[in-house]
Amino acid sequence: MERIIEINHLQKSFGEIEVLKDINFSVSKGEVVCIIGSSGSGKSTLLRCLNLLEIPSSGEVVYHGQNILEQNMSNAVYRAKMGMVFQQFNLFNNLNVLDNCVIGQVKVLKKNTASAKKTAMDYLELVGMSQFINAKPHQISGGQKQRVAIARALSMEPEALLFDEPTSALDPEMVGEVLKVMKNLAKSGLTMLIVTHEMAFARDVANRVVFMDSGVIVEDDVPDVVFNNPSNERTRTFLKRILEN
Amino acid sequence: MAVDANSGFITWVLYILQSYWPLFLRGAQVTLIISLSGTIIGFFIGVLIGIIRTIPVDHNTNLFKRIVLKIIDYILLCYIEVFRGTPMMVQAMVIFYGSAMVYGIRMPPIFAGVFIVSINTGAYMAEIVRGGIISIDKGQFEAAHAIGMTHAQTMISIVLPQAIRNILPALSNEFVINIKDTSVLNVIGVTELYFQSNSAAGNNFRYFEVFLITCTIYFIMTFTVTRILRYFETKLEGPSVYTIHGSQTVPEAEIKISKRE
Image (cartoon, rainbow over all chains, first blue to last red; front, side, top):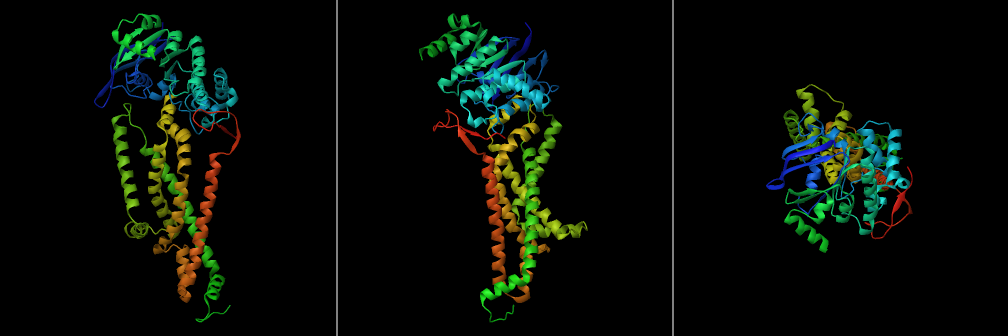
């Protein structure tokens, strides 16, 4: 399968603290990879490094054979190919739902407004938010915001979509609607990288599950192996703790 | 109307109003022109500096750009500190007479007035705008960067509309201050309200009566401007029209949908 991103010897420090230590990892087209692990294990930082929201301290991020950390590629071009969905939604507060999905297409992809609106409407339809196009972000619920955020990322027609704990800031009753949308996306063959605490979802949807602990990848295998027969003691302890709750 | 030294206070006020109203009117006009254009130009200076001073530097920024940004940042900081740290009256003297003596430029007083008020306001607005930009949630920048928008695009389409909305009260405050502070421009011969009042008072030595009128005119101007800008501030919030359904962040479980633009 065609590799979209490959990470070689990635290392990231914030001052003295080393958050990611020698990460090697790759994502192929159509894969759904769930990254699990306790808080502070470096999952979010890894994801943010993939979108260059954090700049790795050393190592390579290879995108279709090209190291994007070299200066010959603009961050903006690369970022447009990697959609990102944030824990805190981060919808543009000054724009309504439709314009949130249109602005990137017009400004970055240089599409005309009419076709951008059409694309945006298609994806808003997909996430079930097409009747709210004129609402401002502060007028809709958390689950609805997150669905709009997913539509906004999809409107850019990215090669892969990165989810940074998309349901962690939601009320329990709203988690379902977002996961349902993500499940449908996974089925449609979209390449997805999901940092999550939803173990049932990971088991159900992922092709691969990556378990991280203290800045290293401890386990990287199909869900069945990671959840039922993990090779590492740390994974077993983590899963036991999670399942007990 | 005849007045003499024995005439009462009211008689004097009416007499002054009657004889000097064109003077007051012209003065108020000049005051408004200088303070309005000074505030607007100063605001744009502030926005420009605010954008420049928040340009991010990352691993893709080459050394040359880093150095240039550093130098520009330093110059802008000097500008802000100097103009915030010295009285506008003194700046007016230095710039007006300095440009004439050193460079031989004789600026028309009104032009000099607008120029001085603009750069003075710019220095204050730069910090206000920067504060407004910093106060915008980091997530807004990240989301814009994540879809591939450049710093300029992020600023113009996402951050500034929100930041400017937040700093509008500070902007109207600046405008009111400018209406009052243009009075110091009389030192370089700008014929604004204070200058005109002084001429009126000099004719009959009725300083109290004249400046009471001046005071009232200043107050009417500032009060009107404050009310007008307050009106726009509330307008920008967007009217709430009807309730649709529950929200998770607002305990009152009300969601307000604004009218379709």
